[in-house]
Length: 339
Image 1 (cartoon, rainbow, N blue to C red):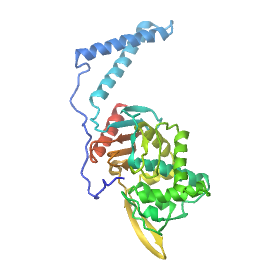
Image 2 (image 1 turned 90 degrees about the vertical axis):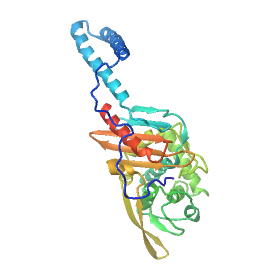
Image 3 (image 1 turned 180 degrees about the vertical axis):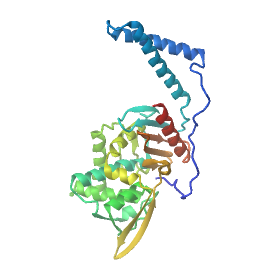
C-alpha cells in the first residue's frame, strides 16, 4: 500500500546529488591517471593482437588511444556524479534494450509491497486479451474485497464496475480492494471450476514469473500486503516492467494522473475520482507504480521516456517516502547524461 499522495500541491524536486558544474581536469589525481594508463596499455595490447597486419600499427594505436582515453574519462565522470541513493536495493535499466546500466544489491530478495500490483495488472490484461474478453465487462465487489485494509479504491459491497475502470482503481490509488476483485473475477475466468479464484489467479501470477524467467520472485497474494509475503528483487521488477510497458493498455493506465468513473450499485450510480500516487508523473515520467508496507519500506518503480532514451528505475526500501521521488529523478538525470 502507499499513502504518500496527500495533496495536489507538490513542491519542486531536485536530484539527490545535483550534477556539479565545476570544471574537472581530465586526470585530477595521479592514482587515477596511472590506473587509466594501465588500462590503456592493456587494451591496446589486446587490440593490436586482433588488428590486421596490413594496417599501420602507429595509426591504429593513435586512434585507439583517443577512444580508450575518452571511455576511461566518461567512466570516471559517471562515477563521481552518481547521485546518493538511500534505497537498500536499486537498479537502472535501459528501457529500449533491457540492458542493465547500474544498481546496487539488485538481486537481493525483498518484500515489494504494492509493486505486486504490476504483475496483478499484467496478468489481468493478458488474460482479458488472450481469452477474447472485454474491458467493458462488469465485476461485482465482494465482502472480502470491500473489507480490505490499507490503500483503497473506495469500493463498496455490491458495487458493479467495468474492468477497465477497475484496473485504474488498482494502479492509481493502489486499491487493495480492486486487487481482490480483479483476482476473483479473472480467477474464475482462468479456472471456472475453482472454489478459490484468488488462488487460481495467484497461481497464474507465479506461472508468469516462470515464463519471464523471474526466478527470484514469488507471489502469495495479488495486493502486496504483508499478511502473506510477496518477494522479488529490484532486477526482477525491472525486467517485469520492461515487458509490462510494452502492453498498450497498461502503458496508458499507469501514465494517467487522475481518473473518473461511474460505479453502479442497486440502481444507484456514484462517481469516483482516483489520483495517481506516482508524483513523478508531474515531471514527465510515464509510470509505473509506488509501494509501501512497514516490512518493505518505501518502494518505487518508475518509467521515463525522454531525450530519445527510455529508463526503468526501481528503488526498494528507500530511507523515507519523500526520498523516492528525488532519487528516482536523480537517477534519471544522471543515467540519461552518462549512458
